[in-house]
Image (cartoon, rainbow, N blue to C red; front, side, top):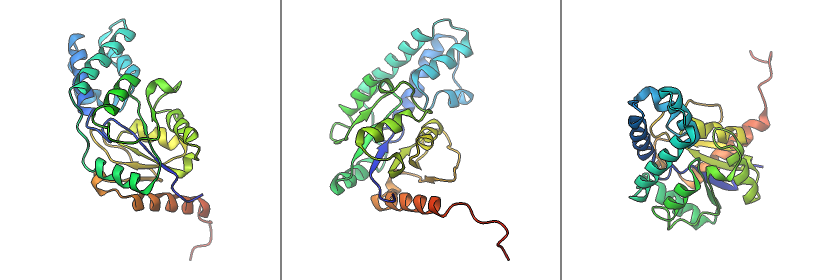
Length: 233
């Protein structure tokens, strides 16, 4: 199958500029626990689920209550999101192009349902997603493949016929593991290259035709298989 069937978007840092808000929320909670957040904490904070960041703060501070920390993180983040989450450059234009083409697109987030609903009811209220998935909707969230596999199943399409648009290492790993083609538009953290990952500096550089080409090229490369050995010369 080489036709693009759906586009699956990460939310935080990809469609809306909320990664900075998540960092600020984590800074606030960490400070209460006596820990000053630095760049060395970033891999355990940016693009990570609430529970993962809470577990990191437990390790960093020795605090005994990961559930309480997770609740505090969610509340601090929710407060900031409710005050407004700006769209990322190019997001509106790309979403409108997909809508005009009649191509299904969904939101696949590692944020809690309360945060997803706040953003979908606010900055993304005008966007007709086919469905939205939050961290609460699968047993395991990113970097596990469950979110992207579930989104494809609910849309009734093959994961291999979907492009997942991501900004973080965990999100890209989740989409890779699910079998999606991956377009990476990094925000706060660098994302390592991969043999089937396409990179863009901004969503302003992304078009529907470019997404279709990515799926076609990936399918063709997989069909060709590995190069034969001993035939050079």
